[in-house]
Length: 120
Image 1: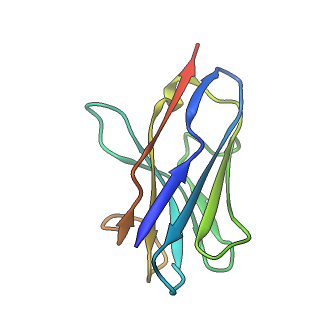
Image 2: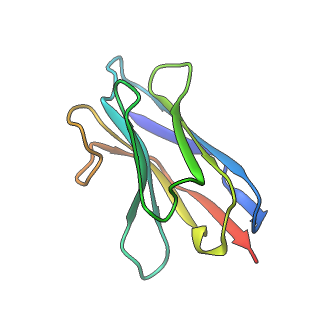
């Protein structure tokens, strides 16, 4: 199973960007998928997750600015990020679990990470 994330880049503060993640190599559906982020020297942070039935949860730091959604294809998700701040700068990792209702670690699969840099 591979999770392929894309969409990172450089954006100015206040701007928007969308990340996408697609899973391949499995016929099963993940019950929960989402995004973590990490900056050097800091612990990995759960940013947003979406469960079967489209239930979502967000870190307090991104509520009202980020929106996670499922894509049209199975096991794909998107993260729409608006009103970006320099503190959102991080490597963003797609993550997935086959079972369960939470994306709290440990997760079953990780993507390779995509860099988001927000300039002030």
